[in-house]
Length: 472
Picture: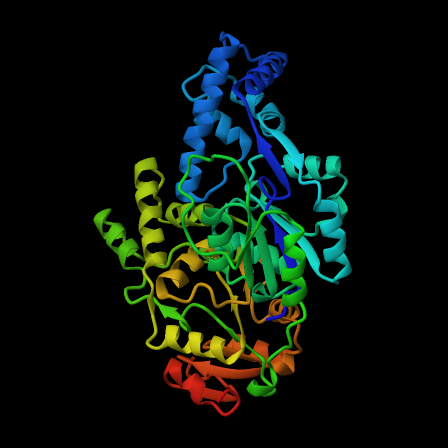
């Protein structure tokens, strides 16, 4: 697909960076002073405080690389930098963001690559959108440095792991950025210095191009992974790549009037063979009957979770509270049982092969899903199924705050794909969601459907999609 948007990494890409121990020890003096002004005296000299901060950040870094979660600064300071110290948590929380911003701007010597302004101006003149996706713990470092460099106005959107809550290479953060830019993921290019974070992440998300720029910094981490589409030494080398990729002719004439196929996720791509089995076993162990008490309360929290008004963790706690489960150990076990049930997915026969075939034919593929699960969980399932990279748009009720059959949720996907409703088909199983797609103007295809579902086409196996006249 023709490239329509270019996303950049920040550290090592827009800017180069490095550090010395002397630089960091000097910065630690100011951190010491900021802690004292907040009423926190750790009774340490400067060397001791530096070692505490450095080792804490290393522990957090190792954990975040493994989990891809990004904690807020106050949690990093309390749980990783100063655990076990007698510190007023409220005082620490009040300055944690400021401390992390100071660390990220003063523990490194950062310099913008000198060619960046001219390159960004050239990309803008090509008519391409420009965005940024960065792993960073503070909310202020990236905007602060972009303003300092005089290039803040080029970037929209700016997606930070500190705000999104997940880190590269999680494909969810790449999809989120593409949706904010309103561009199909396959029409996005990503430029970064790290293979394991930037190139792998862009590949897993299905970005059209993944380009590595060299950065002379020893991270001390494994950086093996996918092969970049190109490796450049200077950012000016990006321009010829983008000129070629942004003027490729669209190959759409061979696939007919339908250009995109959107899917519901649960009970279309996958099913749960033992739905709720782990939680039922957990309740039996506690001699609790799985009755229908508190049905109205459950429905309220169910709706809130699916609209992203409460977290999935809060939703699970409310379910347990409805059964009278409040002991901490039992709550944790119950939440684990609910999580295990969510992750117990099996894919319908032919899903992977069919999706790959549709992608090969040139169709845009998207998901419109009502879910309380965060997108990174679903991408974990899709990657396990071998089709995590095929999606051009993933629209979730949890992120948008609206559910099917509201026309807005379908239109969000159509707008990102850049097509009209008449150019798209929707594959669903629920009567209401098929009706919603029909109301918007999409062709409807029913699979694994409700008994009373109405649609333009019906398929009995997933691979039958390839036999439909509107597709074949």
